[in-house]
Amino acid sequence: MTRGRSLTERAPFLAAVPMLLILAVPLVALAGASSPGDLAAGARNPLFGPALWLSTRTTLVSLAVVVLAGTPLAWWMASRPGRRSRIVESLVDLPIVVPPAVMGIALLEAFGRNGLFGPALSSLGLHIPFTTAAVVAAQIVVSAPFYIQASATAFRRVDEDLLIVARTLGHSRSSAFFRVAVPLALPGMVAGAALCWARALGEFGATLLFAGNLPGTTQTMPLAIYTALESDARVAVALSLVLVGASAFLLFPLRTVPALIVRRFGTGNPGGGRPVRGIAGP
Image (tube, rainbow, N blue to C red; front, side, top):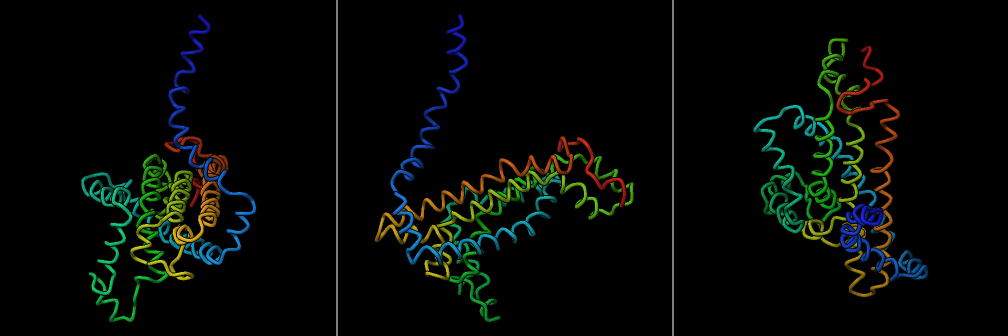
């Protein structure tokens, strides 16, 4: 009887093992394919430093743009349910399901020399394709949906009664948003920002087609891996391990920061637990 119960309890895990192996084996193989000496050689490769610096600064810029411009959109989607909101939500989701290479072509058709806005930009002396700005644009387009959808979901969990109470206590709409809605939704927003940053860090297809692969200008880490693979697979593996490490580091906020925020603000239940500190007065 006990043995039968034990097998029943272990059955879900045993059924999950094949999927776990599918996810873990490639990463284990990647880690085993490179020695510390290879990693050191990869770090000394001329491709490494410029690509890492370019990826770092472009992803930080794209993340800042997404958070600043995406938060109002996420709030609007959460607070204005209806047909228009569903249409906008579908448009936001589209870059997730459209192949990145297609998004690169779309960006060229929008901002290229002969694109939709190309002549207007040229008249202003602006040229976006195959520049660092193009890298940022590609990262924004492919990564923004992850932050916007996560933030919209977090905003939908905010109890509207708390916002009403804040308004009755003298807060303006903007004050109620920043002092009530944002603190309550912050764990989800942080998780979405981490996913957004990770997606921007790994962006390849749209960047290659819209920005090119110019060392020091548009060659991010994924493009450096692509270039290194043509000449030295060991360098490509070393660069890949750096990206894996960066991605693992970005998982840290997803696991710890939301819980720390909940403890800091005492939100308890994002859907309407204890009120946020600061709601009692303007």
